[in-house]
Length: 219
Image (cartoon, rainbow, N blue to C red):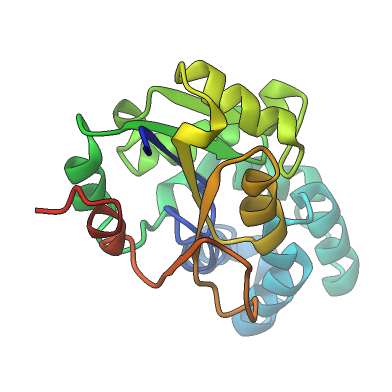
């Protein structure tokens, strides 16, 4: 019997692609005096390309941006600091996030596991106004382990006072999320992502609103 549901953040609850596009547009506008020699579309597209869906940390991204566009009026460190300070202001949730959590709250224990920097990810979670729904939030930098390491999935179950077999995990990455969760005995829901062709998950969903019905707690 499923007693808890554990979520990934980026690409599952947080629409990271939309958030990145909003942020980099606002960064360009905010720092226009230093970036005006670069066409905005080129600045945005190159950032998104180098970012590689969040799998490249931004120190490397901004160093490459400065080199590519011969940016001289602002340093890569300043661009990175702007990213760290302001990204959360542009966070975009996937549709039906809060209604879905409202339906699950009180019926199942809720947890989250996300790879990334501790303070940065926590600010993004808070920007979505969802922190209070979760009994356990594990961020890889704080834990010293990251998905798909089975230890972080096991720790999430432990923090919820359950065994992995009592938990179901929801994520968008076929390996880091789906395989990682299944490796410790959790069921896995793949939130379909067009970047990946398929995932060998126990369940597949298109929208967060499907989860309560799938687990038999829908209204």
